[in-house]
Length: 262
Length: 320
Image (cartoon, rainbow over all chains, first blue to last red; front, side, top):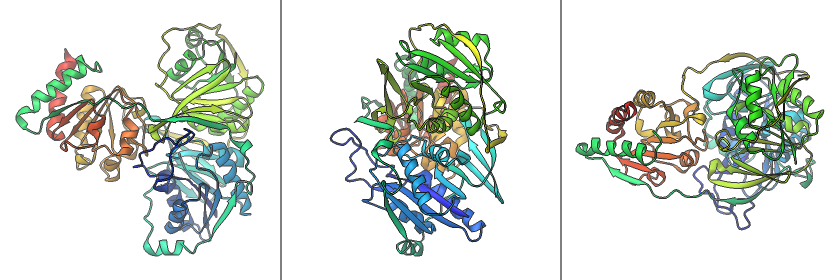
């Protein structure tokens, strides 16, 4: 099987983000970049499918800034075979990213049997690319999956919806699936894996190479701002057992009389 | 004046509340509503009260249950026959799944999960959180029309004043087309709690819960106060809680009226996911835990002692 995994590189979740000078994006100079956490589940799933289907290959594709190639190196260190990097600004919109991913997959000359993505990038939180890509590639797809079983050309997946309910879908490959936390436990990259990843091929392309131009942008952001800070709250010491009941009574009382939430 | 279509999901025959929130913001525009399948006269009347000029009931084969292709094909079929400038829908599980597919069929853009918007004349200007709410930005759309928008439930709030519309209801025949991914079965959730993203009160546990059995303390407490139980990433990754309970940047972004954090230190990625809660109570033994910087009411103490006392105290207050 020709398996493709689309990954995004995002600021580490512990990053304190701040708007850049002109408010068009965030300040990216001193950021630690990581592979989008939901994409780790996609890489892991791809590697499991590869192991179960002899002769398969896993290609990771990423569209984004090139100061750091952490996400693709991590994916290859986990076991992906090769990588394609499409150089672009870090705040490209979902439509342009999906079009670039399609262009990059087409350019490999391989027909995709399975495309895996994380359900959402934790930077712009749009939750769009897998569905946009599926529509552009005219492939069936299911997003936010927490369960995967393969039986020949048929896959059965579980999609998580509100309240933890699951929709069970059956579809045939080729298809596009978007992974959620809970589907698997991503492996760590081993030291030999990290060494090997350095020698694995990474093709670099431009947006023009994959047929994307500025005219493909659909969503424009401006005025990035920080949300308003809350004023400091009240803090009570209840480490001393004798004071616990009194403190709790006071807080619960305030929830009713001051905060009016109960 | 813009022509706006609001796609409304229905639940047990009722339109979702987010549809009414959206309609409330569309005064001054021509707002029409589309649903898939039938809709009772009482619901049509509600939509009219909130400003719908027309209500379209989309009917066709293979639309009795959701499928990504069937629904997006059917909506594409219907919208293509009209002249809409904008299509809006709630950012529910279905809306988040379907709208990107639908927008792409028009080679059009989608602004996801907006928490506010206004129309300047017939021009949409939205606001949405990014980085799980660590930042806010203005969002605009360009390129082919219609332009698509999803709106986060509970973010706009219900309108204070309503401008009624004509609410003319009619059926429209649509084609679902080829459906390659179909739902075989729906597995209901074991828990009967409200979803975290829709919960009014959330009680969350962190690493200090120590194990999964101890979460029963929080479940008991939650039952008394009608809350949904959540968890931090540390608790989920340690196997104390299920992944669908995770609140934070790599879990769910929540905004209940009351969020009670028990034994959660308050990593940046957790704070991002719950900072828009109206009132935050934090219980932690570490007086310097970052969660206290976001808490309206902080209790420095042992959750295993505090939570049972709090449960009894809530009982007393709620019984009054």
